[in-house]
Image (cartoon, rainbow, N blue to C red):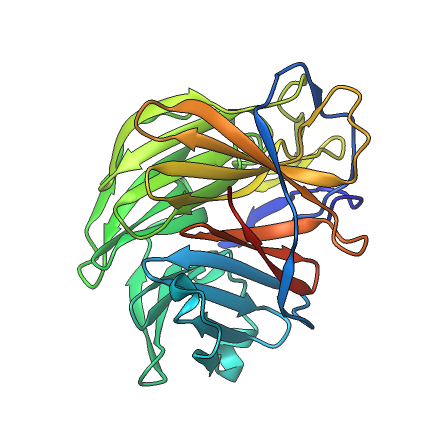
Length: 332
């Protein structure tokens, strides 16, 4: 991902939202002085994890392999055991759908499907699934708040002209639009696109890709915003070729790639590097969610020439995906 390009193109036409994310390396240097600890002595947990992503939710680590459409739950990783693993295969229909985020709560796995304007649930233990909630409008990002509700960043007019955050109640269909913290950009949501970081405890943090902004939500209510480490550039310039179709004028690289909430900290995988830094690797920056202040950073070197592309935190462990290799580090 590091030497690829990042291009997000949102097509909101005839009721469809499509997002494509690629990345390339550009000049993302910063003068910010990080407090850095290097992570060393990696231990391999799994290989052949092509096109996968990983996250921590409650007391489990969820590994989603998009290529094989399978979920793997590492139940005992918090006890530093790797012997109890469960695997669930998606049904054939779900394999064909665009899934922009996954969350899990206990044995239930939530699939966010913007093309269908819905969130889908599959039960890990019963191997059953059903539609649990439909959204009123098209959305581009979504995240589980708790077992009863979720939050989305949606286009309130189905053309992407006014992105808002909205909260939905599962199985009830209730929709609450939050106070509009996003400026109206009329760009299909690309300029302020980003990702949600959460861990199922009621806190959801939305971090933008192209500006260094983070928006904090607690139990479905906006509480505060703050700045994360970013480079020196403006938000991407967006063009519209026809109503409902938006794209970037030039290829852009994200400041922040993805993140996770663990305990009272926000962890962000950053593409921003210190000036003059020639090391091959990436930084994970840590922020205190109570004070919304920067705390420290971890540097993860490329593993066998492969940069980290996703990660999860489990107590004093950091699990990182280096392309197709799942590696474990111990946090100091």
